[in-house]
Length: 56
Image (cartoon, rainbow, N blue to C red; front, side, top):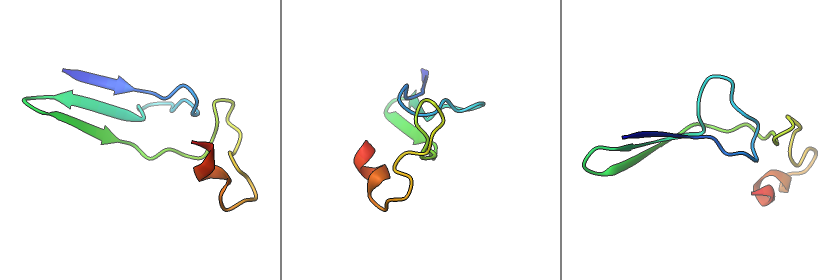
């Protein structure tokens, strides 16, 4: 089984998923790097060191 996951609160990636989960005897999760954009495409926590991590 293959499940592609896209987080609705993050900017939608154009050609990939934020994560893919594969079940083949065990469950594996492959994660893609996410850019610090919200669902509208605006930078989250711009101008601060801690704004991005505290957003999630």
